[in-house]
Image (tube, rainbow, N blue to C red; front, side, top):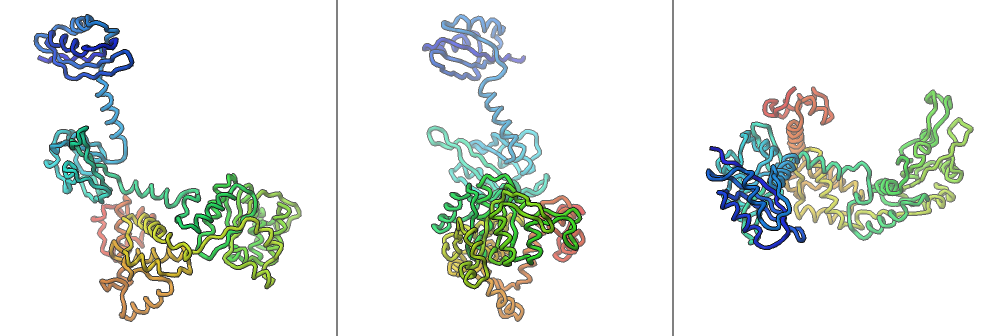
Length: 536
């Protein structure tokens, strides 16, 4: 015999003993109260009740009629689900739809909830797992059970190979306490490393570089950022001064992106192009202007950056003839293409940068004084790294995270001695040099901790290579040669890439090498296609 279940919603004018009256009616009709929820709303009381009948219980209609006799009842109606059921179902749908794996256990270690992502990660393909003891299931790590003893954990790296594939994720577990502070449950949340890497992509390589992306909190750097933010909305020319490798172009990009200008940010290195090519790039040319010119002519960078920003990097290295033409554009706010007669109006903000002492160049007749006063309206000094050494640790961590993201691994860390070695250096190459040193150390170090032996500055490279060739030196404590360490690193990169892509061909494409080169490298390092789990 199937016993009937009755779910009801009742609204009363608020008074005492309403719940007792309902319980009396249920008892007199042979009903078992499965659950009851009570909500007080001002001078009204809302009650949801679920009952299950017995052999002696009357039909539902008679039960409802008995409840209608309770004083102060405003209305009574049937419902399909209890509010708690609806909330639990809603929460379950949310937890099932997110990309993190989630599993919870009660104080006895039985599973109370597990979403499909966690099932897939652990390779548990059973339809129903709720109520089963965690210890009865195949699982190498049971840290979640330690949470029931109050031992929470965070960011534990997991690497699981299950029937559903290989999964790499970070795991965190916390205990859940009741109102008395007693642990009743534990929850483990598993975050896929791939998703974290994609998030890191947005952080380390944003589509628009802003001032918040400039790393460091030192006073000289903050002063430079504060001034740059203040003048960003202006249309006046900005002159960025600073040593090579300090990040002048990053400042220029941040100024442009905060300026609100709708046009493009266009950069040109004035020192990298000869005078004839520089002028055709900056001002453009009409068709047939010179041999080799495009048939339709070409617009210059001033036109390309119209309504935007043109960044003239290393302007101090610009030839004197080009300087005169730049001065004219600034004065007239228009350009004339090479071989053309028409003046083309441009609304282009100019930001210049140089690492040279222009004032001395003016005295030596190497830079136009009138152009200097035109571009030196809003000067910004980007401090060298030696003046803001407290920014070295966060910069180093940033570069290590970016390197790890590129190869699909966990970031390495610097030992205390390595940090001290970085702080003691003079940094003639500034942030660019620091980036190279950190990248070099991450590549040649075969440990998770980068020791001082792997922190090699530019002036030490030739000496280190000579020692390695002669066999008289080593880069790390294990005595491995540079060639072997680079080989180990290359093998790790290839294996990590193979694990992330479905075929060797797609892996090769992701690494920027040919399919043949990929096959040769797999043979060189004895990487099995079967072990990698990828196809040709």
